[in-house]
Image (cartoon, rainbow, N blue to C red; front, side, top):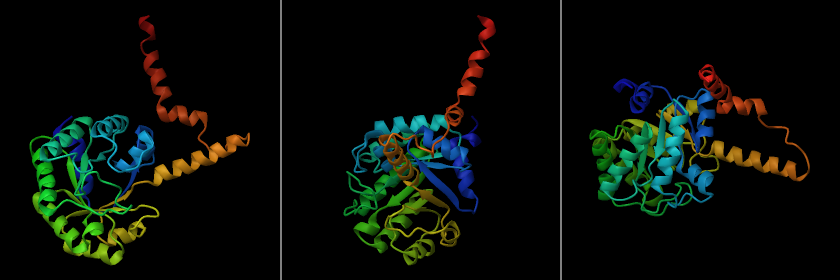
Amino acid sequence: MSQRETPANRLRALLAQETLRLMPCCFDALSARLIEDAGFPLTFMSGFAVSAARLALPDTGLISVTEMVDQGRNICQAIDIPVIGDGDTGHGNPANVHRTLEQYAAAGFAGIMIEDQLAPKRCGHTGVKEVVDRAEALRRIRAAVDAREAGADLVIVARTDARSALGLDEALWRLNAFADLGADVLFLEAPRDETEMSRFRDEVPGIRMANMLEDGITPLLPPARLAELGYRIAAYPLTLLSCAVKAMQLALNDISQGQTPDRRASFAELRELVGFAEYDALVASYAELS
């Protein structure tokens, strides 16, 4: 793979275009493949969704970096589009941030998100009360940038949860500082309304990411409005997971009533999705040697 073809550079090329990118978030290799097959140009491995799907546990820092890297490696191997991985707090001090970036880059990620919550972190829409102080927040992003420059080539998404913990002014100060340190994408978690989103656009230069969580704190806005508000990425962190959960609950209810669910992928569609035809063709190509 040439330097131009690296996952990080493919993601950089997408973000260099002045258009809003819709980014459904994945939680395993199958959901990632569905996103790719639907024509989306990038995806994000959601920590909330992976913790839920892999462990059936809340997004409160219980999942380990090893488990996240393992899940991410499977996702990155299953698809060709760039994947941004949730790096949470970096999993420790600046040395841990370095190693987390190295592991994510080796797993095939194109980018990583690092945030300023106090460990153990929690989902940003469930009542964040504490973030680290400014100095520690800056150390994390500085360590991520240093790791990137040392060879862990990832697009760095710098996130702040300071809006919920300390107020909007502090959050905007941190985002500007993250940009000055060299973060590639800036993420204000949980703005309350369009006025706050407009301040993010007007007061923080750079590439901005929005988080469109159904039933969350931030208003759900159509893509055209998000583009007007200056966003380059619109993440949909739990849409696929929540829809999958509801579909399985309905299917289980049908089965409990002795019925076969009507709304389902066919067996042929499932075989195609996971690549049975390609597998059989590969095996058949060696048949003449027997």
